[in-house]
Length: 358
Image 1 (cartoon, helix red, strand yellow):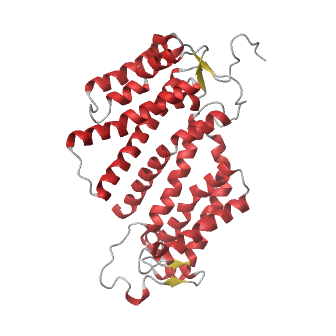
Image 2 (cartoon, rainbow, N blue to C red; image 1 turned 135 degrees about the vertical axis):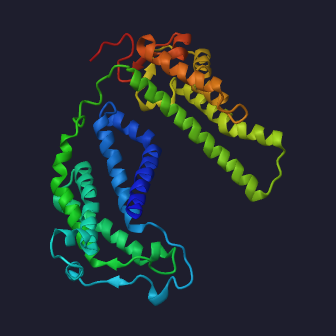
Image 3 (spheres, rainbow, N blue to C red; image 1 turned 180 degrees about the horizontal axis):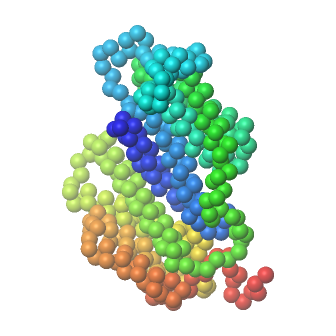
């Protein structure tokens, strides 16, 4: 059970991490393609990533340690005789339901088919291709997997640690075919209907909070990247940095520089990256001083407070919670920063003030 459960848990974990890494561009694309982000398409996108990670984790993991005799007899070997699975299944016993359930070869065959069924479903549904092209895509993925096994993870290992089996290609392709045939069931997932993406949408609390979350993610990721680069440079060069200087540079890299970049974006575009992603903008006119105050009371202040010189203090947490509550409760979901500078939030597809709505 553990051997089967571990790759599944790893697939969910890796799929979730990849989905989080792609969350910002995904939200941006959805707002421009659908005019909003809906739960159904998001679940389908997440499911497709997890199904692909399941294929990777179940066919390539666990990675074995290399020790004496690892490449004995040339490695795991190659099986090029189509249909050999029949001999293996029959040889392990097929005399009744209980024997079939204990038949390791049959279980492996069924598993190889089932593993590619979700992949075939998602490939056809999300790519809008036919059964034949989807099946061929499943075959291509299977060939890539088997070739990776044959080459020892593209020569990362001195030899193959899993068998290249032509029957696996047949089973995987069959699974992709079955998935392509059953893909229409995914049309039942709600929220997939496309509406005119150019029509303005209401400024909701969910949309506002999503934009704030995007700003937070971008700021934190930028800080982590800059901080990691600084740490790598110090380690590679062997530079000795005084503790106070190290804290100062870390603070600049992790908090101050990302916050100032966001301030520059706010000054030049009159909105934050998160507001661009969810297609929100302030009502004109927007002055530089008010933009600075809006930045300081919003994402800029949060990044500065959460910098390494300050840390994630109860004050920071309280400010985040208070910001969320105020956004939810305030008229138009402006939040404290917008209310302080007297700005109103609009959908960026709404016509400018004084211009008649087409």
